[in-house]
Length: 359
Length: 220
Image (tube, rainbow over all chains, first blue to last red; front, side):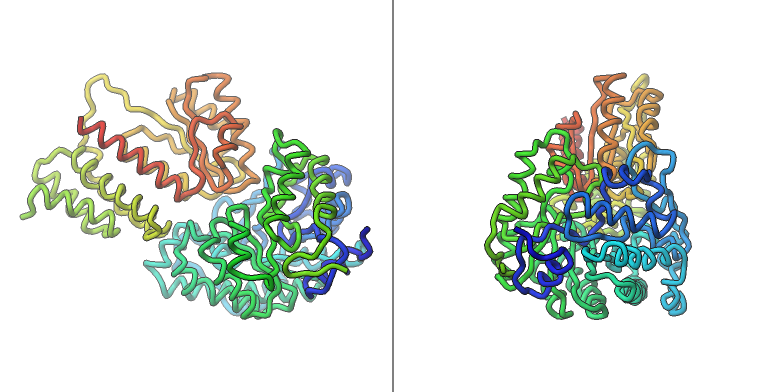
């Protein structure tokens, strides 16, 4: 029987204090179609129209499905837009499509210029101003729920402002320029994270999907990426989580060093990680999150409720410390699957997880 | 003056070592010396890319290296391809390729495109963020044998299913190839696709294997 409110549960969880039940939450994109339908919103309108819509889409998504967190915002284009790029909201599409940056203003690495003034004022630029406002609304209207904020890491963020292939090749061909750009983005991300935390975010996730070991070598990760991820996490208050999508098995120890060297709390993986191996490598002190399939379990037409339940059991048997998805939750969930997943998370195993005890 | 074998090695190693200038000079020399362009492509450039695929599989190369190798390969291809004669009445195989609407990532798509380019296919590249209907319209317009779609994110992957249904309804014989990080073999099967590559890297491996098979066929 749940005794703690979600905010108490998540706060205790990150403090490694015993909790009443397995947390079921996320720190990555989480807006669910049934919730926005109930609110009468259409998908393109929730992203930029107003802080209220942004906040309520998050609040209702969490409340409707008994999640232990709200996450704000939902798409990955905010910073790039604030730096002058135009976004596409796909307002004419009948499908659920997240905003994108169709064309980037900077086409070559040499054009990238992020001045200190730009960094210092980034939170004053539209649309960044909407996010703190939305976080404050969430804190006021849903005080029982912790608010998770997130930021992309510098490499992935770089790929949102200039074509990723240019950045990837630049790691070899224009080392110094890439280092300079990544340092600027690192400063900017620290500044934004501080702003989100000042607005009331209860925890923050640093997401760097563009650096997985199927894209960059572990050597490049160690030399180019790891120091900057550590610096960003060090610049933020706790609780803080590091997530990387894609192949992470060769990076697990280095990722965890980023977390521990910066006073962080948890590490998160996507579906490609071998969880049991990661647990073996990191030991029981590490709070490990993630890995469940965000499309296969809650959304796929062919996935039955029973299959979704089995998927969550497998995730828990993989020795995670909370049930937390491997990536952004896909909005168009099947309600019966997702409710069963939440119930399974709470009831399947009631004892302590490797890193977090039970009341 | 370099021998034929030395030029082949320069083309091949130029691709492997992503030495663009070496490839450019060797490709031009190959033509100037009167050698068959297709042989230079297959035994030089494509053979180099096969080695790149091996290096990628062995985790010695990663995507940045592969992209740089691809740049070198294209420089050679741009020089040699116009000199590959077309047999009378021969029609090249055709592929329609693009990243699905909502997805502005195209690294994987471009690597697969390279594979088709090397193989001498006529490639109709729709680019990225392509509306679903455009795949169907372009396939009908060109009567392409293959439609290849990529999605980098789960959030856009579902559009592929609609495109496949639309294309197969009009022309069930079209081969559909899917690619992208969220696309698994199961997803490809469920969507009714004929082939898949799960990531840019995997696309490289799969594509390069196809180049290898084409080279074998060429040599027979």
